[in-house]
Image 1 (spheres, one colour):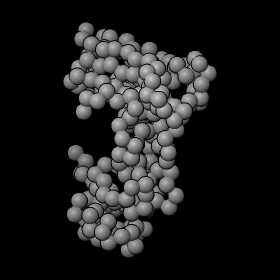
Image 2 (cartoon, helix red, strand yellow):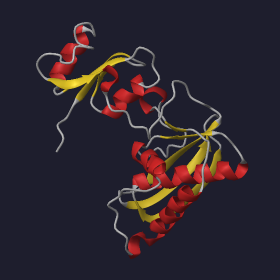
Image 3 (cartoon, one colour):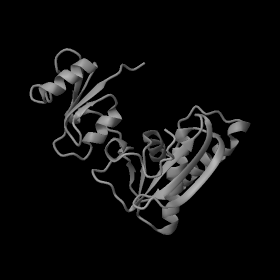
Length: 220
């Protein structure tokens, strides 16, 4: 199992210490002059954050507990996930609602500016959160393509966004009688991605900065 890392953001949208790379990336992507670095312990990260970036950022190591060669932009960025500094309100935001994981799944897309419902699907008898997010994104992209719209699509699921970019899903959900409904939809969505192109931006909703995505079901 990979060791837990902690990420210090000295210069970014919201400086601080973060426990996941996704959270760190949300603060540093598209931020000019971002300064950030990973550490192998929370104590080392907090100490480095309090000390400031001078003497830590750009040094290759940061004393006890520092990760090796993880300075500034040397983090590996995922080409599948893009963010934006400001909310693009000319967009559709999607989200999924589940009761159990796996369990019944439903999803919807709303106008990011007004919250108006644009589409919804479900409940689907059995699926997972990420599969529902994947279906919601593809539904939005297919709808926008049909309408000839260049609107942006927002999702708060990194995994689902990667699956869309890769045009395939990576899930442990078994194919059996209980999951036949969602797998039929997944297969159709994958086929659509493999046979269509789109120019719409697919962006990660920055929950820590902007609050819950506009399509949120409020089931936290």
